[in-house]
Image (cartoon, rainbow, N blue to C red; front, side, top):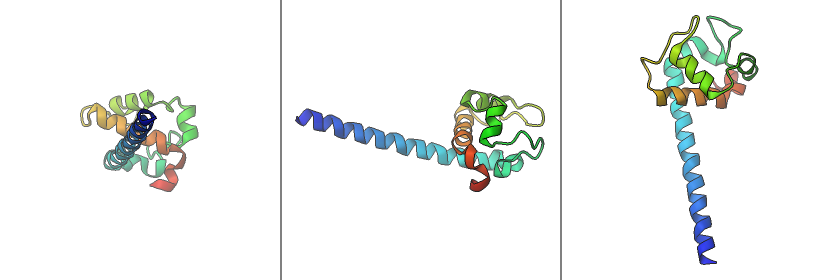
Length: 111
C-alpha cells in the first residue's frame, strides 16, 4: 500500500511539472510571437494576405493546423512571409508554432 501511495505522489508531481513546463513554453512562445510575428499577425490577422490569417478555421482550411506545417512555414517563409530559420533556432520556432496552435481559436481576443 505504501508503494502505491508513493507511486501516486510521484505521478502527481510529474504531471504538475509537465503542466508547469508547458505553461512556461507557452509564455515563451507568446513572447517570441510578439517580438517576431506581431508586426504582420497582430490579432491573428495577416496584413499581407488577409485571407491567410491565424484563425483556427483558416489554419485548418490551408493545411496549417499541424505543428510540423507551422514550423516549416516559420522556418522557410512563403509568399510575403520571410523565413525566420536564420533568425530563430528550432526550439524557438516550435514554441511559436505551439503558441499559435494553442491560441488560434481566440487570437483576436488575446492580442
